[in-house]
Image (cartoon, rainbow, N blue to C red; front, side, top):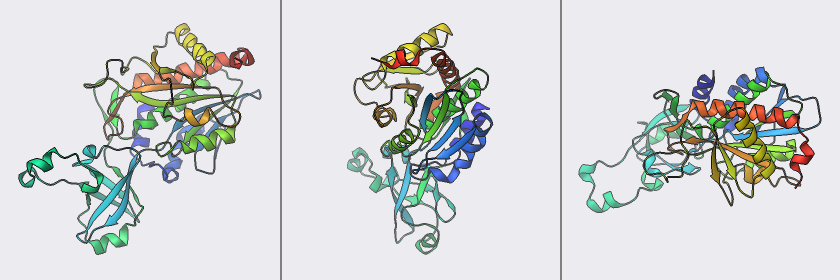
Length: 346
């Protein structure tokens, strides 16, 4: 079920600012485990599991993904584009794309052949303005199908690698939306007294916007933010966390120290593997918005390692996602049976 959800949600586009297009996929998968769903006015999807007390715990993982946006149609029938979110232009060369115009259009991103490229050009870094989408259509045909501002994504099917490792576009951050789904399933098996809110936030890649509005709407007592972190691969720093070794808990001023300690204690008690990272400043995640919502929300950040971030071959280990979901469900259960006021006070 977990892999099937990930493959389905990653095969459909949720480009930042266009997340409303495929929201029914989320509703279909979360409905069996939650009691209601609503949207904030930016479009974030907020699923709720009803509790028996007045406490509210919010999990947040952004559903939006990076993408492309059409900026022009050339006389020769090529599409110029810019990025939605951070993209290395080198990762786009020779990729298949889908342009979401009046109908979905298949295209490719080409590059000048090496035979006609001089040495100076080969040394120069690629820029987005140097790249174009080729659909095979003429300008006249494209003008009937595509408008300036239409979104596009890399067209790539998810694949299973060896063991429990899988690869796809947009595991950042749909892998963590999957953690929320795993948590919801687990909490159907074990008790929870608090009402649990699962916020699939929008527009994180373009400024943490959905986290701001959804946390203001829910006004939770505790925020559990879920995002991906860099996974160990050739060329990465030695302290980078490894795939398959469990989720990652962050330390730093943005995160509540007593909640961190509680989560670590739960993982130790139930033998869930856990990795650690230090983030002394901003995290670059939804935490940065949720923590300062209203009068302030105590937060922790839990991540899963991911290789090749912001490319079409992002790679994760299903074991990390499953472990994170189970650990968070047990963490919530333990919080519900603890003195929450004592935990949250400084």
